[in-house]
Structure formats: structure tokens, C-alpha cells
Length: 106
Image: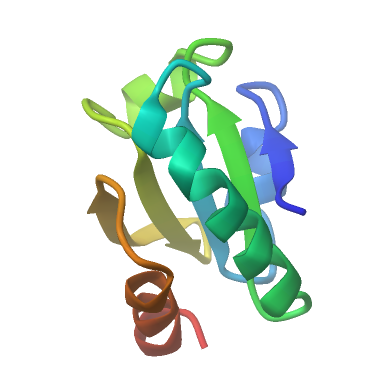
């Protein structure tokens, strides 16, 4: 399962993590976000120990999405060493996310 991020724990969990971190910015009312949910959880299981996979509810945590210019959801951002290395907006296939992870995170 993906871990839940908040504005309060974002820096410690995402930016200061030794592993690359894939963050799914989502909201419960967003249909494409809900469709992506199971895929994100599958990726969290498949990449255990290689990539930390996390989710952030943009309605409950407005500060962090604002800082990263999130204008549409779902948005996936890959952080490595505290820096943004890739961003994908919109619902995408699991294979597209895995390809991005293999190129940018591993």
C-alpha cells in the first residue's frame, strides 16, 4: 500500500528520503484519481525497497500541491534527492509509470 502524506510530513517522508519517492496527488471526488488508486498501490508493492510510493489528498493538504504548481489531478511527481525529476498529469497506464520509474528512479 502507498503511504499517506500530509503537508506536515511531506518534507521528512518525500524530500529527505534516501529512496526515490513517487507521489500521487489526488482527491476523493476525482474519478480518474480513484481509477489510478489500485495501480498506485500495486506499484507500492512491486517497488518495495526501491521506490517509496505515496499519496497526498490535495483537498486535505493544500500547501504542498500549491508549492509544486499542481493544477490538475491526478498528478504524479517523482522526487529523487529532494528534487523533482519527472511529472505526469492525468490518468496513465501502469506500464507508462513503470517505464518512467525504470528510466528516472532505478
